[in-house]
Length: 182
Image 1 (cartoon, one colour):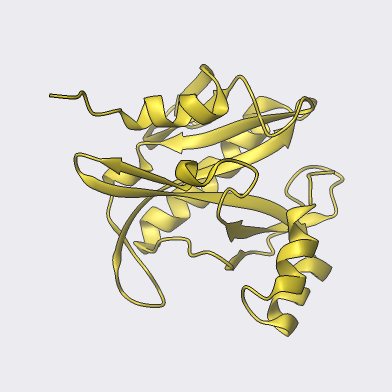
Image 2 (cartoon, rainbow, N blue to C red; image 1 turned 180 degrees about the vertical axis):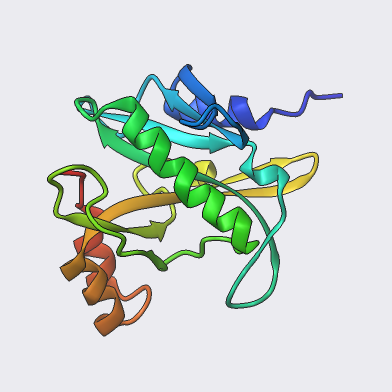
């Protein structure tokens, strides 16, 4: 019988080995899931981060009510402090848990002020991890399907474009796909 790939193995297959992880928040409290940093990103100037264990919690789609298990992923420039990205993923993931609501593709989370000091980016656009092979977007594990949701930092103007152009429009997807934290 073939061994089932673990979620951690699935993530590492596409993002490289886990280099660091956080399991307690800045106040020293145990987090309901981990945040991990990987050895690679989508290019030589980026690194990937994700939640690990968020998918143990069943969240609901605000659109369909469907049960969804998901992990959240971000790409960040190598120069961005690791604890900043970990805190962002913790905050977004903890909010999803508190609301018992999955983050759905084409949704904008925010704005909530600059995501990092001095940044013009204020929100996150939720999409599929299109910079990676298609099989990365979904993990088929023993507890069911886990969806990987990519959080792309966007500006107020880009978030407004989503609202004006409609969720998932080709124009909006092209514009947001090139966004990077700055």
